[in-house]
Amino acid sequence: MKIEEFKNITIAYMRSTGKYGAENEKLMHDFKEFLKTNHLLNDETTILGIALDNPAATPAEALRYDVGLIITEKLPVNLATRQIADGKYAIYDVVHTKQGVLDFWQSLPERTANLPVDEEKPIIERYTMEKTAQHLCEFCLPLKR
Image 1 (spheres, helix red, strand yellow):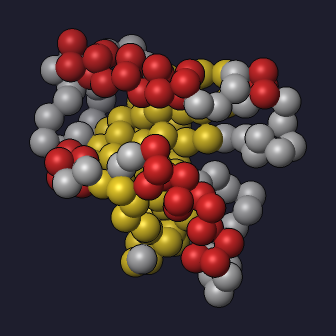
Image 2 (image 1 turned 45 degrees about the horizontal axis):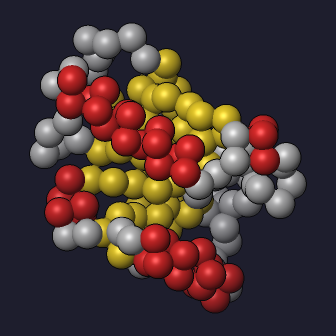
């Protein structure tokens, strides 16, 4: 785990609403295809996956999930954009398999026992081409100031 400062991050994104799981995977696949078609998927691409709602507190049909591309300039495509909350994040490398992600979520209470996690902000999945080539993704946990 390492600590990283997020500042002035803007994403161009697509959103799905509904039960988490297969629909999130489909959205991620569709988003990557959109990026490929529009020549926006390259070695510098960073994709974020953001579950915006707690499934324990939100009805399944109302759960929102965003998949976005970190942008640094105006994109030649028409996608909605939004800011990622500034602040410090604890970054965890996670094996990019269903079991690896499941293990991460199951071990989250132990991993964060001594961290001031900001429960008001969503946990962010981060996919860089470098990490995915190593079959890894990152989970970014927001920390209180």
